[in-house]
Image 1 (tube, rainbow, N blue to C red):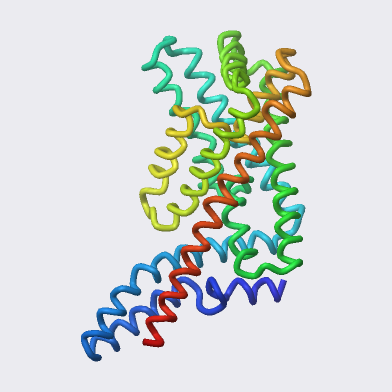
Image 2: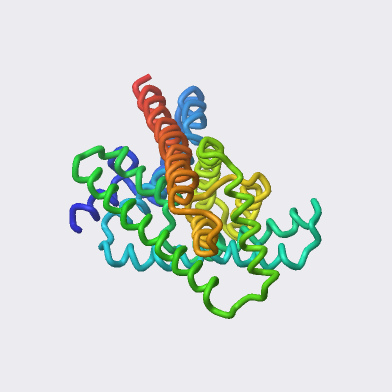
Length: 308
């Protein structure tokens, strides 16, 4: 834990935390203002990279803290997140049952899809697609065998917890008298519509969903009071675009399985594996890698400016 805390206080290559970076930039700006104009212009060019580095630093530190958490704490938070994410299915299903079958009805019901993400992100619960960004950044900064092992542990525990929570919710919705027949039919209708996608379509749509969740995670530190609106806008676009998400879709797919509309092979190989791989590729191997490469590029430029 001491070693993790030590890494958490490093910058994106080993240095200051986000607040210290901002304070240091302020001190440098005041000193450089007294120097020659050419040096001042170079420092102005460096202001934007330092802001990107601050965002990267904050997310990297969050990821480092998550990597240092115990497995049981991660699992319980992940189960809670899986249950919370099922609110998306509930909200959308209830609205689907009450709204007319039209384009306008579809656009309105898609607002229900955002509920689960709002609950999970604001409650700081462990969501797998969110961790594909935050937890991978410290591993990119310190690509050691221990960090890769910690990342694998985190992903495994969170994914299992999320799917367990989503499954528990689906079982509860199916067998407890919570909803009327129209709502049950809506749940089945939503799931069947999702399963109309081929495995390759599931995979392709999941890549974009992973990218959008990664973008959401990157925007939240700078969103301030508009955080909820950022969550709503991005996840609403995911809903109307019908992009597949491993945790939200798990509730719908398991509900279909319990209703007897699909079998285990369809659950695993048509929905589960393609969606999981697509989310990971979109969130990690595309967004996180590009973002980290940007910060490394910014640093190289800054070091080059310092030498000139």
